[in-house]
Image (cartoon, rainbow, N blue to C red; front, side):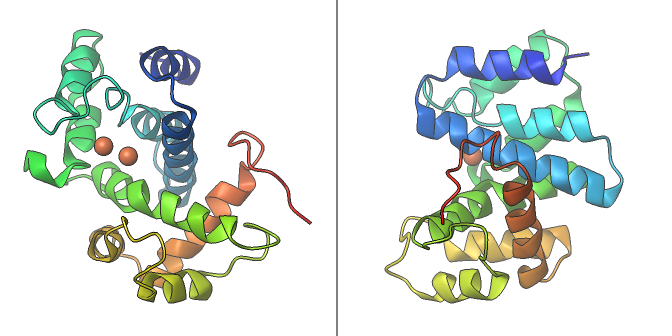
Length: 187
Ligand SMILES: [Fe+2]
Ligand SMILES: [Fe+2]
C-alpha cells in the first residue's frame, strides 16, 4: 500500500508548478478533514486528494487528464475505488461519484481554491473568514470568475451537506494545516 510520503514524492515528481502543487495539497488537507469527520480512513482520502491532478501539468487535455494518472496508479496497484474517485472529479469522464470519497473529492476540488481566493483578499486571510462571506463572494460574478458556482453548489449537495456547513469544513481544514500549505499568516 502506498504511503502518504510516497504519494507526496510522486505528485512532486510529476508536477513542477507551485500553484498546482498547492492546489493538490489543499485538496489533500480538505480530504483528510472530511475523512476524520465521516469516520473514514484518513490516509487513503489524503492520497486521493493529493494525486487527483498529478498528471495535469504534463497531460492537461480532457483526452488525457486524469486517465494517464489513473492508468499509472493502477499499474502501481492503487485500489480501484480510489481510481474511481479520481476519475469522478472530472465531470467529462462520465464516471459516477458513487462513494463518499468520490463525492468529497468533487466537493472540495473547486471549493478549496475558491475559499483560498476569498482569504487572499482579506487582511487577516483565513483567520476570520466566515462561510457567509464566502457565499457572498459566490454571488459576486466578477470575483474568481473562472470558478463555476454551480459546481460548488453541486459538490455540497452530493456530499449531503448544506453549502454553508461544507464551506465551514473547508475553511477549518485549510486553517488547521496552514503551515503545510505554506499560507502566510497575516496580521
Ligand atoms: Fe482535475
Ligand atoms: Fe483539482
